[in-house]
Length: 252
Image (cartoon, rainbow, N blue to C red):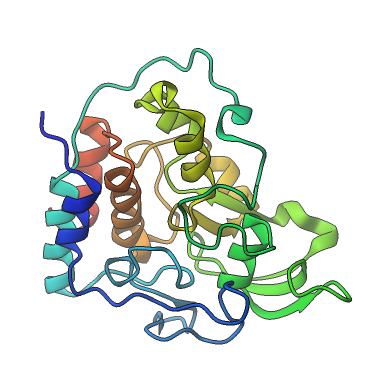
């Protein structure tokens, strides 16, 4: 089986528009350059134009040209069987939402990873008094359900941060053999993180695309592209069933 390097992934995505950062290095509260609204008016970005994960949310990958590019990207994924979960522990990927995972966007910007992605994707954001980091309320255009979620920190679990490529899945596909710094990067890389409906995230668990896809069918190809981007960046294989499912979501 062939394995595509991160450089190969970058080549596939050549010409993509990268979003910038504002202020202290965290995404700004306004609409970023290059973001687009879905048919429902939700803010989001097309993953093929967002290979670093700095723009918010997801919008459908629906044009014929984009679907061809999506299938080309997914086709480059290596495949293997899913290994045992033996030895897996969330702590193997570092403490949750650490700001010190070097080598990923927004690291060491003075704000933890969870709040970084809440700021990136939320609308109407309010911060804790005296802070420009800790989000206490917002409206989230949830890509997984297609609904706008009014969220307050008092009910934090109503919005959860999903690892698009689940950490347990990564462990079973090869991350068990990585050094801890690489696992910390995967766990805190904003490309791999989406704030979403808590119940939807709980339903997903550590499933790959063959076992779980977002209820919002319109963004399933975009979800598959993001899953592939993360897997390629970290040189992770996927299962044959997951790869087939991902290609199918993008018209393959």
